[in-house]
Length: 100
Image 1: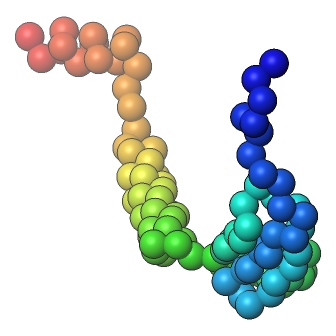
Image 2: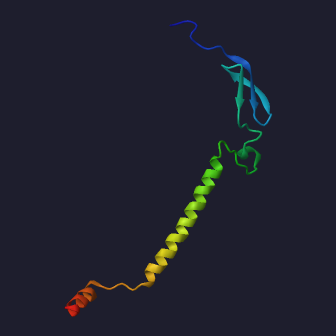
Image 3: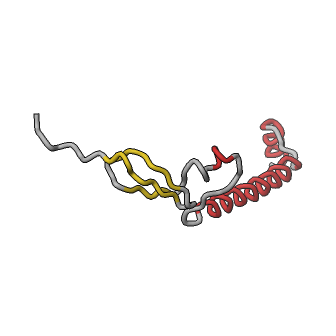
């Protein structure tokens, strides 16, 4: 087996969250910086909040609003089409024969 191929293990790795929370764990790195931890994650806190990176939440909400407006337009088109009575094939053939 090869010797000295494994990374060094640090038992006192300092993890720092963007909310300011810090805790110690074991890792191959001496320090780790994270965006979300158990102190600020909505699942653990029970609070509803958006963690927005690069405007993704706003883009998603814009797409949802656009889809709702599109669905409303298609519903109005369907109702206007439904109000026009359609003819059966037999009626159309009779109209063609009577036009001659």
